[in-house]
Length: 176
Image 1: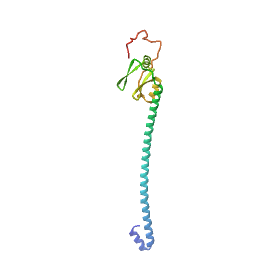
Image 2: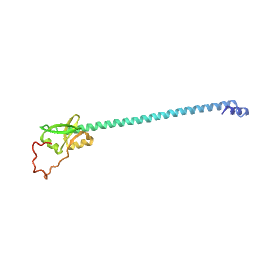
Image 3: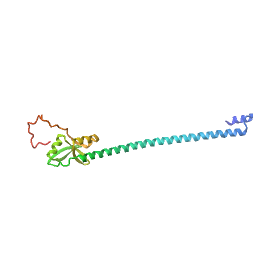
Image 4: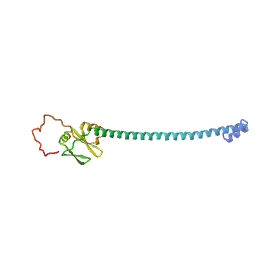
């Protein structure tokens, strides 16, 4: 109540001094409580907002960690596939040239391994800084996980009795 209205009520005898003070205190308490509630509500909203942002950051961080763990697991699978299935006895006198990121590389192969590689039965894969030979079926499994590991994989040529060029001799010194 405003002071002028309070004064008028006192003069008319409807309100005494005690009731007026009591009403004034109740009004002040209510105003104080509303201010406190507003401050509490604002702090609750701020806290909720901060918690929501933290949850969002945590989810993004967990997703990033999961992706990194998945990449490591895939790399471990690829390494295991290569190490378990690599051809170890391939050294020979025939140089086989291939490209790795526009750089020409060469490995020396035996005649039998060279023939298998040319026919598409073997593939060249890269493990770290080294090149390994693996069967084409293993190379296909590796390619499902990471295509960049496969350096060279020729199409599998089927040996058939209907060879159009069977009558023609290939010179011994001709190498591809």
